[in-house]
Image (cartoon, rainbow, N blue to C red; front, side, top):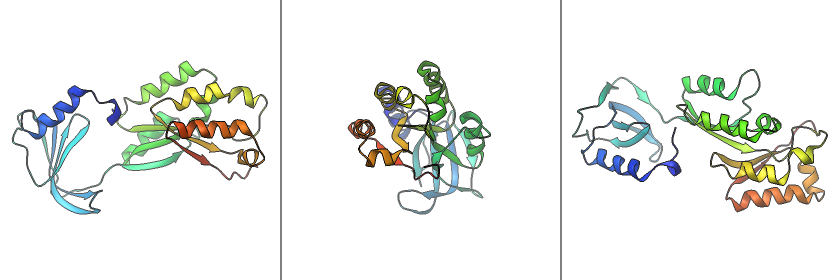
Length: 214
């Protein structure tokens, strides 16, 4: 699924053309009762969708419906996709299967732990998998680990500054963490402090975890 920063000029122009009636919406959710996330109240109206983008939500029907699938939503209640801000997608499932399951119950944005991919020690393979998830009908984001879940040998080589920075530069990595070894930071570990600084330079957030294994 495309994120706003990835839209081309042509796509943005097409969105405007849908509003102006030059292009038909792909799908029209008609007479829906939907939760407006901005007004924070239930509204009765119509939702125009063009490809994977909600173009309009309100009382007006589109002028052009030549190539539009119309769905009667008069008896339905619709909410925006839910956001799960903290996912460890490597338990009894994998990121793909977890996303499939979550989307069936309305969760369409997931912020995931990258630990297992980081430990693969093969960035090319890991990044190719992350890129493949962009084609799923959900929004998959990640946080970048600064350390492992518990102490391990050669940890400083695995979680090197170069490796961490490579992950942080991806547009689908939106925060750093979770920082399990926060006591090391408090005790003066400048490497962890450097990672946090690099994260802040990229305008991303850092998250710490008060883990029971410490």
